Amino acid sequence: LAGKLEDVLDKAASRQFYMHRIGHWLGMAVPDVGDYQVGGAWRVLEPGMVRTVEPGIYVSPVNTNVPKKWRGIGNRID
Image (cartoon, rainbow, N blue to C red; front, side, top):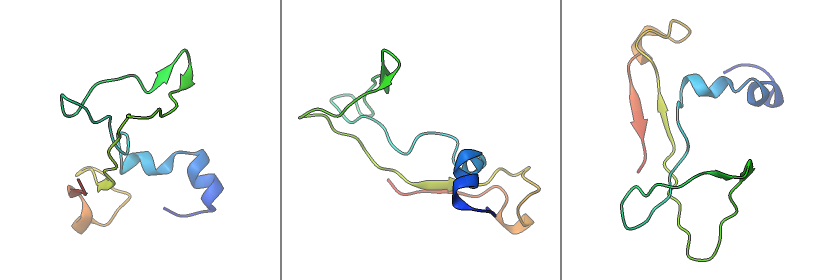
């Protein structure tokens, strides 16, 4: 990704390499389900709530904006 950090973030340019959220709720049914927003506002963590953090990168096999050797790869740290 090229450009100023603010511009890259504003344009959500990283979404082409990371199509989903950075983690999920963790509970009795792993992964647990739950809304990320309540009444249009982001949910605030409360005591006892647990979230995972699973960073990763995924490069579409048809993404011609990256060198061919990187197309079709994916890696996530669970």
